[in-house]
Image (cartoon, rainbow, N blue to C red; front, side, top):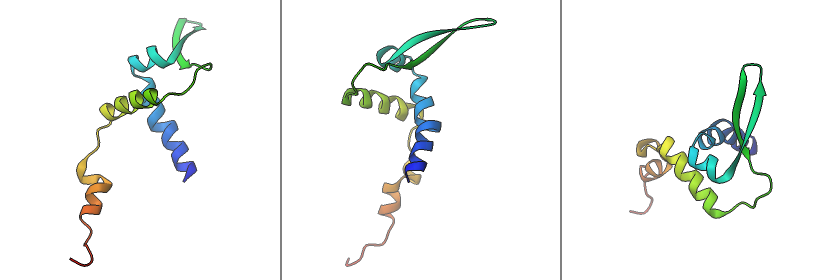
Length: 87
């Protein structure tokens, strides 16, 4: 389960959240990398900061806007479709 979570974080969460300009300005620092063709701006996580609940709320709102959930494939819908014992 931990392996699946790590893969999801690496492939889904991080790229989606790090693309947002609001998150980049608020929680990341800009680093300029010099290449043969010129300079490239890269945003990396700030090392000297504490994680806050507001940061998580901001990131989940960005993620949910980029990847909205579908009610028909959600776990809530699947649970509601199960037969109820004792009715």
